[in-house]
Image (cartoon, rainbow, N blue to C red; front, side, top):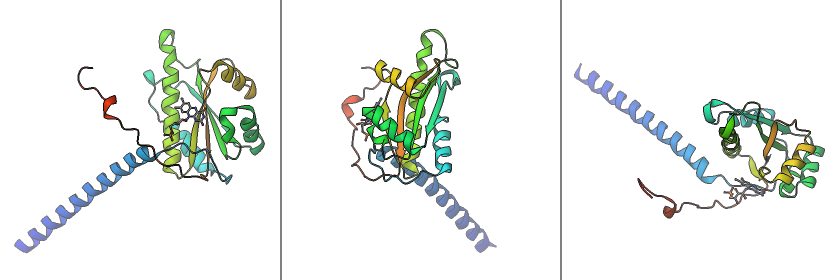
Length: 199
Ligand SMILES: Cc1cc2nc3c(=O)[nH]c(=O)nc-3n(C[C@H](O)[C@H](O)[C@H](O)COP(=O)(O)O)c2cc1C
């Protein structure tokens, strides 16, 4: 009987340890994904699977938004000629030429808050964009954020190029593809950026 109890205790302890290790592994994997994400600007041209596109969009829309307004719209570009045209038209998105996918992350002003809180859409769509970049990295894809808003010339150009309705504001073009480069991870941690309790 004593032996049985001892065996049960050991089994429970082992189970507990395994679960703790599992949780620690998951935590480290999530942190490593954040720490090792880099902008990728060269792509092999190989396609991005439809399930991966779906996962990227789900990751984007999992982001937090002010008052949970979700004031966004995502324009998915996957036609090679359209991607090539983006690369030609937007000098800062030249990498789209060679990428397999571009997601134009936009704010939807019809869904945004009113008054001075309207501009929260910028932070909301930025949070979605970072989620997409992190999801791409987790799936072994490369991606880069090409800024559009608030440069009015680029906003106007994107409006015309993508035939956007007036209430849709393009924040950025996220270019995605199979990576043809592995840029070094930048260590941006600087203790001097941190203040505690008071400045
Ligand atoms: C708001 C914003 C705008 C950006 N615009 C561009 C851009 O137009 N072209 C580009 O190649 N990269 C752009 N980037 C990517 C940055 O250059 C990149 O994140 C930065 O150099 C840090 O490198 P990392 O992403 O590898 O950590 C942009 C990033 C942000 C957040």
